[in-house]
Length: 255
Image 1 (cartoon, helix red, strand yellow):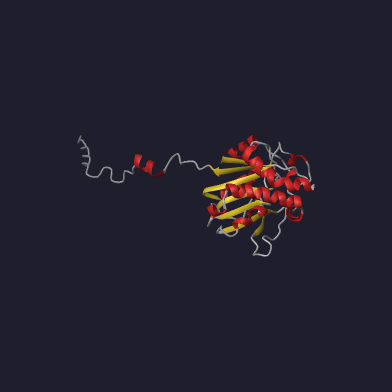
Image 2 (image 1 turned 60 degrees about the vertical axis):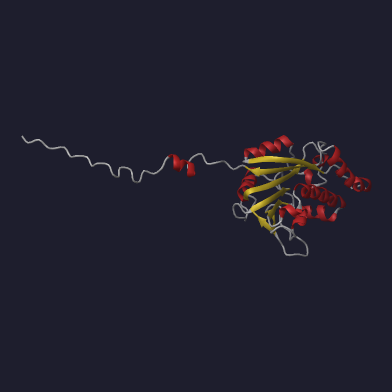
């Protein structure tokens, strides 16, 4: 079941721990997808991914925040023209193949129909498009309590999310982790969070972070039949028989 948009907004924008989490995951995202690399592209977030998308507002051709109906929607970004949209999680108001980059956070693990969400992800991604799924890490401490949004829904291990994606036509390309500091409101841990993130990324990237980030591409299968090759191997015989001698009709015998 999806979380309420007001609870998500309050966590990410009105608590110190939420701002720490937002910064840690967003920095990891921009490390995987640098802002300059997405120049002129269409960037879409589904679930509650808008806290991560602000860096792309100035470079991307368009940025869209899709928020599922059971969760609710809020205007975003604050003080600027709204780009967030309330949608049916099974039918997104986006044309097929329009999206270059897709970010899914608080959308997959809390949904009752994750397969249908993955089908929509595959539909809207264009040729060469990429998606990053951000899900709670089953081995991380952020998924073991309900004090943050990452403690709700179904957490995943790396092998579980990889298997799920492959079953729905995606190829996992890269894995990353974020949120290595504990989910504590204590000033000591909040102040140490930045150093812990940098240290873990550099020296212990295999250490269990609070969230898994999986970059995936859509599998595109080559046609088995048809196409130019098939036409060459089996050309149309439009003029077949032209120039051949006409058959001589058989003479009827007279009795």
